[in-house]
Length: 241
Image (tube, rainbow, N blue to C red):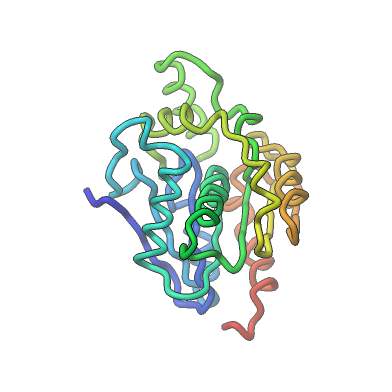
């Protein structure tokens, strides 16, 4: 297996580096990437334990900082110039972790804009999985995978290690330090990250805009792809194309 597994989709002038969620793969972003192929070039990494990416060695390799390092390698090898940074679900947390690290390491590339979908700045306030025995946690992971309708999903052990590593995280203190325009997209019926979490993101980040998609759940990327694509086409105007 390769250390990293990155796919580039589209040929548009707007480069979007997009990070998937705790149980997903880059497949969560594929419908949107295909709809915006004329406007955007999507750079889509699989985090370890997905696709051809090498599985993590253990729980210590499944922290948000570890995933942010994967994102950093993706930027080093696949991005030149301006880019938008996008995250869905846990990918939002990875994006915030990357920004926090970049502020401490001058020279790392910073995004021109953020797109945060179905995320939270307060992982310690969501209940994706209840604290339980290892066996029960793996069973809960399988159930959530089915509930979210993930056609491509992460290795269950990797998900368990990741949840144990990140579930006490609170990133609210980082929000006020974000210095780029931010679009927050959230479904009104999101049971995994209720709308209040999207509102926390939008209220905490200066110059952030919140778009609420009424009736949508946590899987808003695939449930409402055409609507999200229209918002992004309006935000990234035609003169860029």
